[in-house]
Length: 117
Image (cartoon, rainbow, N blue to C red; front, side, top):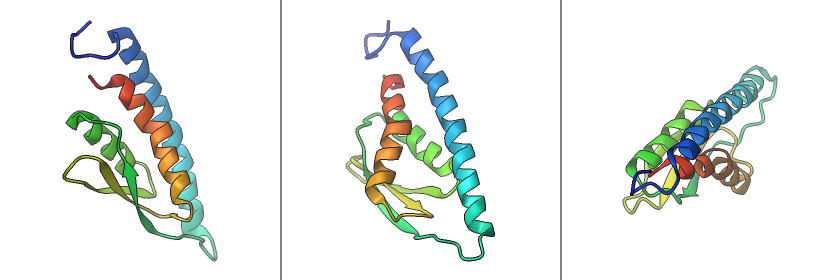
């Protein structure tokens, strides 16, 4: 086990696999939601910019989260605050900011926390 690592390598490897599965699930769900909004007669979208508080501290962890958010249809990472405490995200449907923040933290950030050193 690396001295800097919080978790043994096999836990981190398993978390990487879990992150891939979670990303593929989020990719499918959000692709469907964006396609539904695009082809709806009266799309119900409420674009918003939300501030997601970060628990990640490493540059790699923050970059991974920002990239996963940007790769998910309907969301784009805009900026990480200078103090690396907040990630600003533009989302297609920002009608429930608290739910979006919780979803990002629960789906991606929790698993990245297990992976990052």
